Length: 173
Image (tube, rainbow, N blue to C red; front, side, top):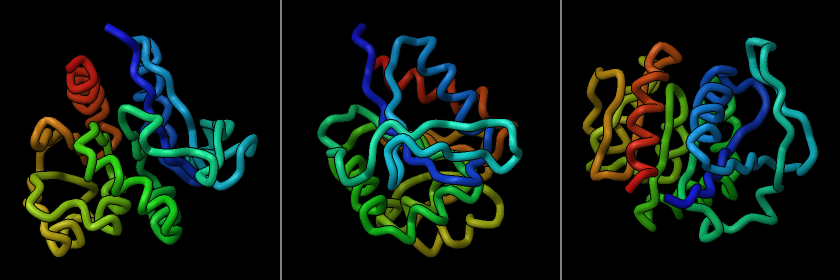
């Protein structure tokens, strides 16, 4: 199988392990990751202080059509990114085009703003579940939810093994 190109939307105060562990699993499986933020070359830092990631591309220079899938790590990153319509539209394009989207913990906040959760089964961090329901999602409390062979969501860093397993399975298709 050919490796897939995975876009990662990330900014400061992301949840460290929710980037580092999926990134490691995807790379080991032969996939390529492109970290996207406002500023190419910038270093973004995780909120636990364990992870530092160099931004590969500016949101202004990327097109969703160049990627096969999207990873949205949690922490405070998705809440900051959803205030920027460029990231909201980028996220929405993956959902509209039925490409795999992997969102963990607070990651679904971007999907809420993209109005992409209506009628979808999903999960997320405890504090955002009502927001997800208000956005039309059928929210369940499970370690991982796969909806319509496209959207993979999980709740917390404890769910990462299940999140990675289901995300990788979807990339095999």
